[in-house]
Amino acid sequence: MMLTVNELRFMYRNKDVLKQIGFSIEEGKVIAVLGPNGVGKTTLLKCLNRILKPRKGTVMLYGENLLDLSTMDIARRVGYVPQRVETGRLTAFDAVLLGRRPYIGWDISTRDITMVDAIFTRLGMESLRLSYIDEMSGGELQKVAIARAIVQEPKILLLDEPTSNLDLKNQVEILTTIRDIVRDHKIAAIMTMHDLNQALRFADTFIFIKNGTVHIHGNHDIVTPAVIEDVYGLPVMIGEFGGIRCVIPGAANLATGE
Ligand code: ADP
Image 1 (cartoon, rainbow, N blue to C red):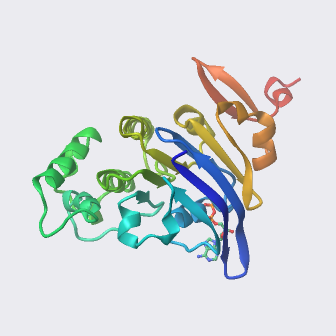
Image 2 (tube, rainbow, N blue to C red):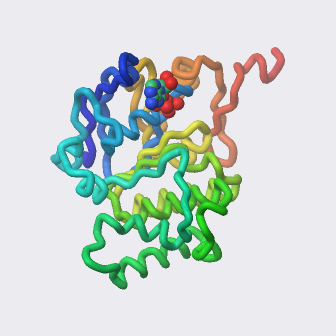
């Protein structure tokens, strides 16, 4: 296991959001963190890179507790793409180059520039290189933030609803690229997601959060109508369409009118 989270607990003032979170993940995998609004998915991501300080627990990455490392050492291991990205008067190129900051010594190297160039090409966003990020659409900005996290060369990519601002084509392209990068570089991506169909299509492992704990964690086999109804409180059907599993809201008798 590359990452093992043990007994993680986090409270906002007196609100116990994460009571006892534990799970392990392997390298080369995309993990979807699932559960209804307000259950603590964003809070969990922020605890994993210590933006929020857990009250208890460990986050062991290859035997090191991330929670004990310096901010710079965490940045060399964990890339984070928040749900809302901050803007400023920076070009997209410079914004992505900032992802190299944990590695830049006295000067920016040719390797830094080459990496930034490569990610603009890989994400199909060459035309945005010199655009100012404070003049960008939400989707463009989201791509810049993803590019920045990737050039950080993290072992773990944390992505908070990475496709929430993207149109359908960009959603599929970005998630496919993230999955390819995760496999090629043998890293892991932990993503919070609302769209269960996207999760089923792009994730290898699923973590359902309920009542501040991991309700269930596992591969595709655990994603069943019973689990989804338990966690989201909504009856669903799961079918297969062109070899891809799909979740459709509603009970079978509603759909057929029986
Ligand atoms: P999710 O990402 O699953 O929608 P969040 O992690 O954003 O859930 O939030 C979990 C709970 O913590 C929610 O009830 C939310 O209202 C609360 N919460 C989030 N941020 C704060 C904060 N800064 N202070 C107090 N409570 C918060």
